[in-house]
Image (cartoon, rainbow, N blue to C red; front, side, top):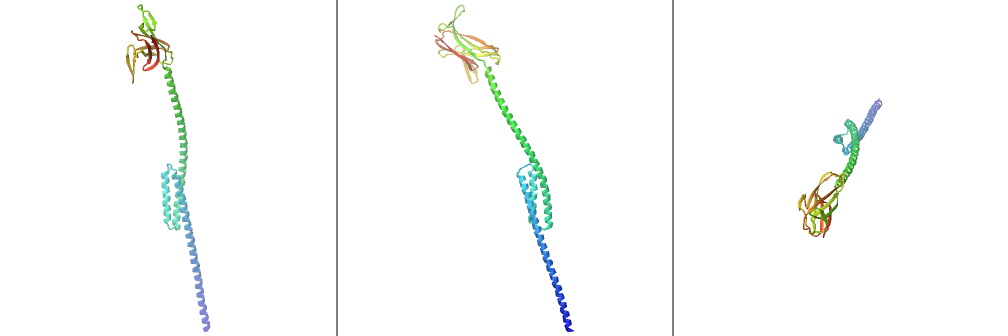
Length: 294
């Protein structure tokens, strides 16, 4: 009877131990399973954190490249880039739990959406700027060509003006000096002897010029004897910084046709030797000649 009781007690102990063993095994399995789950969740959150950080870094790089192009949207791009930088800083400091990572992912998606809108606007501005630059360059080329053409025209006009000015100047030619003896009867006899001369006659011709201005033309005649004396009135005229001493002046009514001019310079005791005749248009020498009295 006692043996039966001992056997029953032993069975009861064994049953309790078996229950405890099974419970322990179940507990150990659960703890191990929970630990694996935690490890998996931690690994997942770390991977997600790295993924979000990588996406933010790429987003920042996109903004940096766009800002470097220095468009009119640079200020807006900088503001958005700073938001990305701040979010990266916050993400680095975060514990990396699922809830916070979800928040950062949501914020990243919003920033990425803003980035796409701004990039589209920026690309549009770049295209517009390219078109404007091309138009400006074309305008500069056209203006440059117009400037060159105008410079050529100005040069041609200046040359034409100079040619007209030069062509409109009157030509004095056939200048000649002659001495005459005056008879009591008024008759004039040409002579080459100084002792017989009473008058020195100066002849010159103004050539025809259709493009010259018509009207009165004044010429200054300078007669210089062999002793380098200016004969006649010996008047002086100033032309700017230049001074001219002349024998007499003559005014000619010029009508664009050939004009023969003849003027007499009276005197006595003319010296022997070479005489010089100079014709001036103001202070410009336009003709000269010489003759000899013996």
